[in-house]
Image (cartoon, rainbow, N blue to C red; front, side):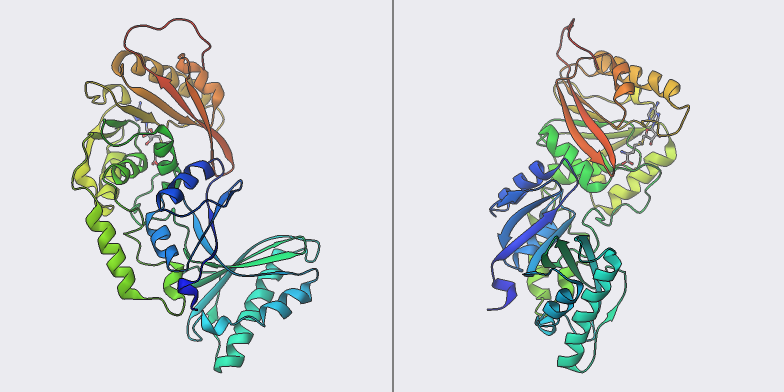
Length: 390
Ligand SMILES: C[S@@+](CC[C@H](N)C(=O)[O-])C[C@H]1O[C@@H](n2cnc3c(N)ncnc32)[C@H](O)[C@@H]1O
């Protein structure tokens, strides 16, 4: 049986704080959730299934398909086991290989050593079988193998994504402090927004929240813009089947969304960047752009969600100025957004206290190493008094 239709463990990595959301996405793809870890969810499927997962999952970083697992207590064990595996059946002798690893074992004290040993074993095996070896290097544009070595157990995975899936390919103009695409998608999915009500994204910066919102609302698969994935460099990859799948996903997307999506920023260059990124993502027609202070953003009548990702002042001396901004967001919610659910994504809970409204939920996220919260405010019509603030 070829790997392309052999069921094996598939490990899908994601940002800390998001495995619950990713697990929901995997189930929606009608695959089982075998276990949930801190930064990954394990499922089971064929190598062919990874094409759809890479194209469709919004909060996944890497989709790894198990190649082999074995005990290895010493550095030599690694090479000896790896050189026995049939690499010539998955990686072309004229291809390009890179190896990544996560290593936590007393057997080696430098993960670079494990990387080099893994790469050596793979290319030695292919040279022995085929008479030539693939080129190799750090770039993840070809076949990617991931080694996970914990204590005396090794798992060797084919990284079917290659470059991380957060690189959707639409953010040509990132500006400063952009939110990672997969994180923005996780934030929107955490709100439970279904695309039928309006989504307002003041302080949109490079537009990531609005663009991910538009992709979600129009049911557009987030990976269809990408031209390169790790699986394309594995032997037996069927380009025409892949193109067909991509076309089907494209066709399943809705031409319009029911809820209006509004993205605004005070800086004209941010709005221009957001517009261009949306154009690249093929969702420009789904988003209304405005250049204005966040307090002036259009908020359609009725119910909807409004999400802001204000700066949260990693630099010294920003806190005072930002305090006024956070207070202003509270006033904006109270004065302009009644009937909505308001959200603030921030890494600074001290500043968040300045909002002065009671939070309904505080959902933990991580922006890289920074612990963040998505704060939810229920903005009821009519005044609300009392309750804890911040
Ligand atoms: C942290 S960035 C948002 C990044 C965005 N989530 C992204 O993915 O690119 C904050 C944005 O708030 C904008 N901003 C700051 N003060 C503002 C104000 N008073 N009204 C509207 N936008 C403002 C800045 O121009 C900046 O683009």
